[in-house]
Amino acid sequence: MPIIFGAKHLLVAAATVAVLLFMEVGAVGQEVGAVEHSVSALPSTQQAPGYNPTAPAKVELGRLLFWDPLLSGPQDVACATCHHPQNAYAEDRDLSLGVTGIGLGRFRRQAPGSSIPIVKRNSPTVLNVAFNGIDESGRYDPATAPAFWDNRIRSLESQALEPLKSLEEMRGNTYPEDEAVARVVEKLQANAEYRSLFAGAFGSEQPVNAENLGRAIAAFMRSLLANNSPFDRYMRGDRSAMTEEQVSGMQRFEEIGCIRCHNGPMFSDYKLHVMGVPDNPVLPASDGGGQNPPCPAAPQEPRTAASRAACDSYAFRTPSLRNLEFTFPYGHNGMFRTLRAVVGFYESTIAGSSRNPNVSYEELDPRLRELQNVDEEDVDLIEFLYALSDDSFDRTIPERVPSGLPVGGSIQ
Image (cartoon, rainbow, N blue to C red):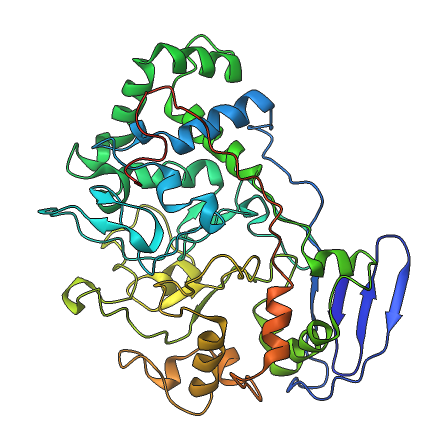
């Protein structure tokens, strides 16, 4: 059911009947013969990799693990601490505070005397991460789906274990990075309730292991869907689901050129782009400012052009535009509090200057420099972006977790 934006027409295909809507949208700055891009409704169901089929027992185990601070070194932070349903499984903070942090969202603060640095990235929502990597035709492979702002990890199963190793996020100074996952597994193995839950979910003789830990958390995250937004309903044939302003904003989305990067059902091409977002002043220049860490001196395997671009640079993945109404602030470092500020950033950038003094205008992605007629006062465009949000997602919080620790960590 894609919507295909061309230079002159908008083609909408609904559930079973193709419906042609001819809308004069004007020039979009594309050369004749240029590849057209499309967006469409999200699928109604999600795929899982063959090695980790979804099962209710696995999802519920993953939910408990997601909320249990036992997974952190100091046992004071859980996955849910920075991905809380109150904030649509994102975090109402520009940059996250992991271990030794206290409170929730924008009220979270570092504990007195803490030596743990702040996390260098904004926590993106985990709603709809089941569809990571989905292309304009609706195809994706959950076994190789990209994760993180720099695409450095593939699959939710692998991604789920990375925060356990991170000093700033969940490890702290409790144990060395190379021991982190094994130490978490030891804690789970020592808990009789978790031993029983892992056996029920995976059914093997020694089910409590790192592989199954990642698989359970990934299964839970795949269950977090928000795929019934006004845009989704409109694309499935309900012409009353979006307002006139939102439909107009959808046309503006094409005219401006946003669709060149924000395409497919998730409104992301899942590629890395240099946008010149200003560095967050909380991050000292000596700590790399807002850029990604340097590439390893001797990588273990050949790096792709995309992964090279993410090293020691300001190249970040195109974020999904899904659920923006609930997942502020925006950007890899949370520098934009409102959608109007985001649009204003693009308006000022295409005027001919980079907003980041460490990134020259010539280094900015060509697609950014080709945007046309961006206006931060464009109410219709922003209304369309709101139409991509769905508030009917699962907000279930466990009453307790097997460790007996505070659910969600130190969030009070």
